[in-house]
Length: 242
Image (cartoon, rainbow, N blue to C red; front, side, top):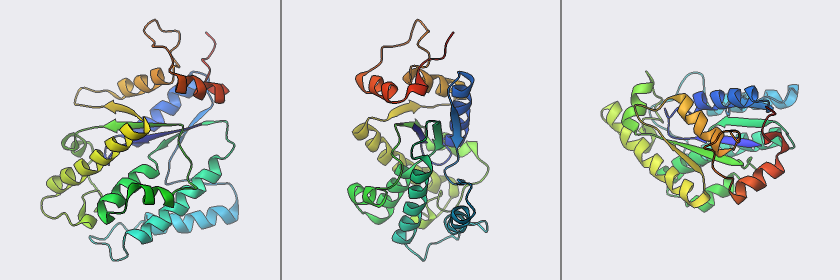
């Protein structure tokens, strides 16, 4: 089973993915946090190819202020990377909680290139399809305060946004979040709003309740038909014995 934690840059995806995987493990479910940009197969040849690809996509030297290679160049690279994640997860009985997915890549490419969402989805036909996507909704003015530094792409520089970094970041991330919210509504994602008072435990608890891990709690809601089917297909999600 694959759970993807989505959201804009700075929404807390990696942190929540780790906390959720740990919470599931503590409840007796085989779970792991999967860093989408750091995967290995344990095979020398495959891992050496991935290492080369990773350096091209996420270079250690950092990002330039402008992109001379174009959207399609990075789309093909990222499509290959997410295809590899699909191969890695094929047949797995572990709950993998991944910090992001191909959907944010699609949203950013749509904003930058104007390519339709359907065309962009086609690039990622071989990517792993999450069983559940959780969108962490947050005001960019709040997420801006969560990190000390953002990359050029996260500031929208590659999309032509200039000027004050905070203003550029908020404008760019606002536009990406609009697209992600549209995807969430169309595809039935779970949306978890965050504000200044939201704790990470609040977010994790909401997701666990959605997965009906808290079936022994009096306030748990009944499972929907899709969730019942999800649990039927994934035996490892049945509640741990009390």
